[in-house]
Image 1 (cartoon, one colour):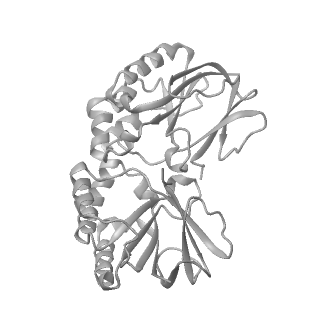
Image 2: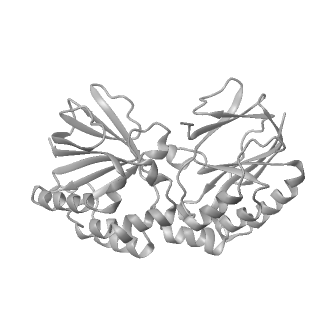
Image 3: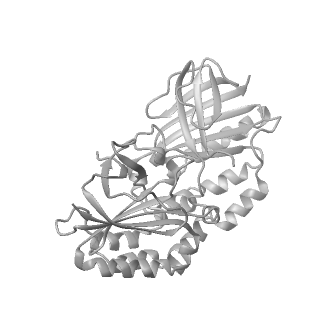
Amino acid sequence: MTTRLFSFAGGNTGRWRVQSMNTLAGESLAVVEALELVEGDAGPLHDSRWVLRGITSNERYVTREEKDSLVAKQQGLGRSLSRCAALIPLRKSAGWWTLTQDERRQIFEDHSRHIAIGMKYLPAIARRLHHCRDLGPDEPFDFITWFEFTEADTAAFDEMLKVLHASPEWRYVNREVDIRLRLA
Amino acid sequence: MTTRLFSFAGGNTGRWRVQSMNTLAGESLAVVEALELVEGDAGPLHDSRWVLRGITSNERYVTREEKDSLVAKQQGLGRSLSRCAALIPLRKSAGWWTLTQDERRQIFEDHSRHIAIGMKYLPAIARRLHHCRDLGPDEPFDFITWFEFTEADTAAFDEMLKVLHASPEWRYVNREVDIRLRLA
């Protein structure tokens, strides 16, 4: 069985070179030159300035019909041509977390088309979502999403983020850092 | 801000005396005489035989209408007459976790009436649900529920569990231990 827990260690060394770090909301993260993606709990790595952790988990919003469409279109991480990546940790406000399931689903998909927007960019943009909020009471972020794509699909990725950022769901995002990477 | 993380330490000492431990599904837990409920991460406590951890989190299934009804009827933990408690850690099968949100909600409420059943026993049975599955990849349980009630309401509590155990949702439960306690 493969692990569900992943660590993202920012520092001077790592397989991924940091191209840019852009704080979109809330507190920034210390600037680093490289990132290493580690399976399991890395702990504080040699020379890392920060380590973010996230765990893959069950679907929170998608229906069976949506899931089947996603699975039919999506491709896995690690494609040889996908030499570009983005690491986007984000946190949502207390107001988001006190909403009930139906209220969150309504904002997430009925009003913001989060699933439909992501679907439009498949299979070009591969992604893995990690949850952080329930790892413990003091996590700095609620989610970490890892994206992989080709150099040529970078513009499409930027466009996807722009559409998501303009959606009602993003009114609840109070910390977000967009870290762009390239395979070393 | 109060913590969302709680530890349940079973051992020789603690504010709650164990009356019975009944393994309903899967592997049992070592028999202990007492239980201490600790805010935060207790770590391995002095003389504890096991420590279970869980974190309170956002609602996974209830709608706004259901939530408002629950809040109107429920009472908090720590009522002076509630000298009886139950600690019920449980785990659900891999089959449950690969279901999509709509499929789980359908089993949870449409077919099993989990929310409606709990509502029927309010305010007598006070409860707090803790999530464990996303604390890490190796947690022994997915959920820990802590219940408090009076001696006189014990029969009602037993009845509630009986109804829940007969529901379709419980076909997905593959580990469950029912620990009954009384204030020392």
